[in-house]
Image (cartoon, rainbow, N blue to C red; front, side, top):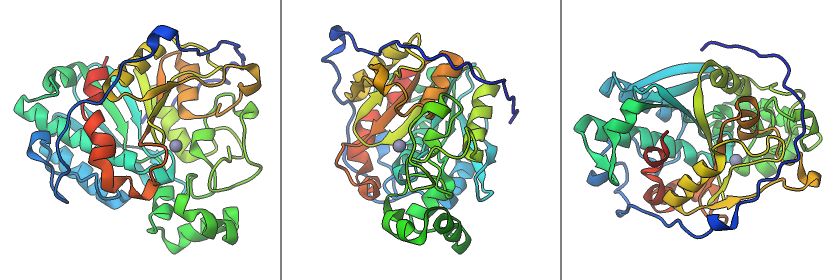
Length: 353
Ligand SMILES: [Zn+2]
């Protein structure tokens, strides 16, 4: 992908709040339905033939399924490499659709949240299947949407971190992680690892308000913003992708909480952000979270992908936290249909620009 590095970002700290007007409360509720699929197969009303989000995704399975989907739907699905991880692994980005409007979707920025890779893969499979058959999903004309919009989706940004947390890392990768955080911390935290393989939290490493944003002091399984802004190759890849296209908005997919973060005090109220967040809530019923309203919280979480996108492009960026707050990360894929898919299968269709 074309990498265009703009100059230094303007460091203007804005004091704008993100309060949700009282009229925003109340709607929501889940839609769609269907029982859980038998393992390995997709229920007929969903369509889709390739993916199974009820098993944890590995990089290898994701790459294999992306290739298969690209072969099945050559005019609709395209797979590109946008960069590489710390370990040197290619980071795939898949396009879905032929439309001129563009939306960016990021999955698994945090390692333990790999169920979001399943959401992107299942969405890709299901929408492509419906498109090819002229089918609707929850009343949405899939073909019409995908001829209007192209979704640029990174199903698994933190590929190395996923290898760690799912126990599939190579001895070299484990050595790198242990060296970064210490063997004791590694043993204590590998089951809930969020960071990349050298202990940098990718969602705190973006080049926006980085100097002021919170961080633990050094490499750790979570919460370390890195030695410099955009020090990590995964973050560089997303920044270059974002700058190379005219994206209408960004969705950063995370777990947990069943909530939507749509605003931060650094960028203030971005045009269209609240309206987009309300559209998401109308689909899945998640709560809109106000964040960073007081000056004292202004730097909180300030160097994430959504913070960066809002500030750099003055366009909406939502962090959507799937799954209820208490749901164990490792068990989320097994309950994917009930926890995520039932309420969100038409999400991208219903919020498409
Ligand atoms: Zn996260």
